[in-house]
Length: 360
Image (cartoon, rainbow, N blue to C red; front, top):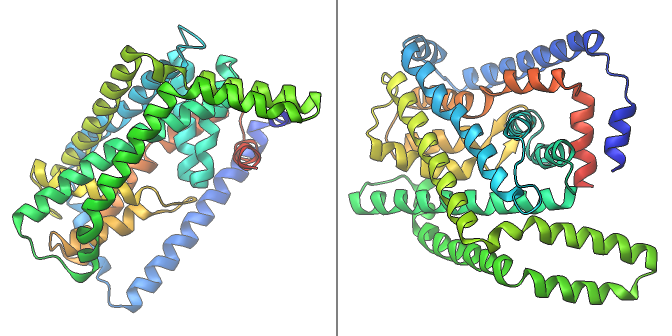
């Protein structure tokens, strides 16, 4: 792993570099905040209302909303331990939790390329093949997407049954949403079944096909494919699949609990029942697919759109609640992730380098 050797050769001078990193983040955040403030002010956006709505947040409920959202990271670590069982029966939950927190911090800071930092760190910490952890990451994405689709399907059914008159911007979503959900769910089930029943035959065919390569390349390619198949081994166990599914349900239940607590904290902005929370979460879960480095993007845009078009919330209040949603679900973990990364000797440069080189 060239990235690992490069990082190990780095001189970790945390104290001398920390202030530069902090100063850069503060300057970038200030620049973005000023840009958004001036652009929205030009359009008559009432910033005073935003300030009043944020000032009226119930601090106790806001703090309570952090408990379930932080619990999701522990749930993810436990679920990843199930993926590791074929290679390591008793992985360190502490290592998995640390890698998970750092990984999600990287996503908040670098966007989607940060996704690859978590499997990389887990491979290093648990001393398992990196390719196997990419396979585990694919499995995790499949289960997360399946749960998001189910929540989205529930949201669609409730909206369609209620006869709510939605704006033109959401009409097309409701029109094609059901078909997309059905098609995507079928595709995900087919993928899981293929991993469960066809991974060994596919591995044998790939190994046979690789024999045309020079011996050195053939051995390397065989090791990579073997590690990938090994990472998929958890799908061959009924007990492991049930455990992964239950952890996935728990994770999304915790997310829903956090959203509900956040709605109670922001009762001056929105008035949500638990069904409203699930509808809102169902739509917003797809906005999280688009993640702009350091800014977010998809979550805020979709949240504002759903709040204004579906729930009739005023733009300023919708913007405030969208900002709080993004802060709790994406940004709140960043200080803890940075602390863990610095404690383990990982700098901004090394984390960014991992994300870039793993993608390449």
